[in-house]
Every structure is written in structure tokens, then in C-alpha cells.
Image (cartoon, rainbow, N blue to C red; front, side, top):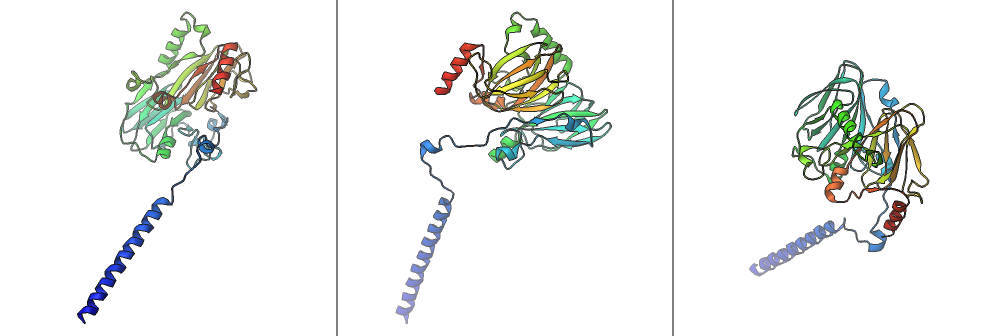
Length: 343
């Protein structure tokens, strides 16, 4: 009897070991399910849908109910979350007079430019009163931001929530303080640099908006966001430049008609201008996208200066040393850009 019992015990132990072995093999197989292996030369530069050239029209925020109007290009870029570029989300916030609305983003940086109107915005970081032409940025917010208007208002809102969604993270650190740029101060600085020697020969006539936390590093609006207030003088054409960041350009002001526009494309011609360009007409209060790496030039054939405010993820690219901004100065730049593409 004891022998039989002993044999049964041994058999059960062996069965248990087999079960454990099977369980371990199943676990390991489960771990391997998601692994993929590719041949290098065929997979080193995978196809991803391009950032498209698209327009977010001013007519969207000029009438209708108080609401947020997203510039969502995620479907064209193959993304599963709302985005205007892989790293950024841009929207209009329309607020009817004496009404309020909340905006919410899980982001490290949020920028708000006042297209028109007046009012105030309140968050856990403080309250800001604003009017047309002001710009402010907020760090990570745990709660929504409340915007209250005292006149019919429109705000250009850009944040980096898509970047965080791609990384699968949430912001846990306030990287900077509320930072405010008043319209009068920005315009005064543009006016000052317009009169500097050689200003008429610069690739762009504008001011980069910086922050105390980036003063010794990227000199950008925040650690991820970048912005420039650029004036396009009457009768002027600003030669092409290019960079690896996506630009989401707000036309602050332009004469009605087709006389102010941007030409963009991936190549330059022999004279250093954009080859076979896509043309985007500037309309006051309208936003248009410029794909990464595309050359783009600005043209004003009217008698009135025009203004543009691009928002980019160039804070991130500058920090990574991958912005690769290049300027066309004429035929030499065109030939050098062609040779650089062969490298």
C-alpha cells in the first residue's frame, strides 16, 4: 500500500512539473507574440503618410455658437488620436460675446493667440486678461482652462498632447511658468529690428518668442513649442527656407484677395525658388499647414504689410539637434540643397 501511494505521489509530482513546464512555455510564447524582425534595407525608412497641406479657414470661427473647432488631420496621417501634426494639435476657440468655454488638454505646453476680441482665461496657474494680438502659454494643467469673453472672440490654440499620446505618458512636471506676450511689446520689437542695418536682406523679418526656461538652450516658446511673429513687407518676397518641424501658420493679417501667399514644395529650382510649388493664399484668421522638410517662401504683391504667426514643434527638434533649418539665398543654395539630398 505504501509503495502504491509513493508511486502516486511521484507521478503527481512529475505531472505538476510538466504542467509548470507547459505554463512556462506558454508564457514565453506569449511574450514572443508581439516581436517582429525585418530586413534592414527594406525597413530602415518605412512608409508613413505625409503631413498634408491643408487650410483651416477663418470662416469657421467667424460665426456660430461658442465652441472649439479642431484642425484635425489625424485621418490623413494615419493616427488614432486627434492631431494637426504628429506632435501638435491646433484648434480655433470661438467665444460669443459674454459667454464662456472650457478647454482641456493633457499637454506639457499650451499656446493661446488672440485672433480677435477681449476677455480672460483662468487656470490653476492664474488668470490672464487678454485682447487682440496677445499671446500666452500655459504649462501642464491638471484641470481645464476657462475662457470668458467680453466681446466676440476667437483664439488660436496649439498644444503638444499628440506627442504625449504617442509616448503613452501624462505630464507630471510644470516645466515653466505662465508666460505672456503683449501685442504692443511684440510689435515694438519688430519695429526696432526693421530699422537695423541689413534687415531688408534677412530671410524673415520677425521675432522669435522665447521663454526664461529656454533662454540658455533652445530659445523657443517652450521646451516643445516654437513661434515667430513675422511681417511680410508690402511688395516683398521672402526667399525659401526649410526645417524638419511641421509649421501650423496663422495668417494674422493680409489684404483681401490673392496678393499674399506662400509657395511650398520639396525642391528648389536653379534660381533658388520653390520648384513646382503648392500655393497657399493668406486669409486673415486662417491657418495652413507646411509639411516637414518642405521649402517655403512668402510673397506679398499688395501695398500693405502682411503678418503671419507660425506654431511649430521646433522646440523639440532644436533640443534633439535635428531641426536642420536651411536658407535659400539664390542659385548657389539651390545647387547645394540638391547635393545635400544625395548624402
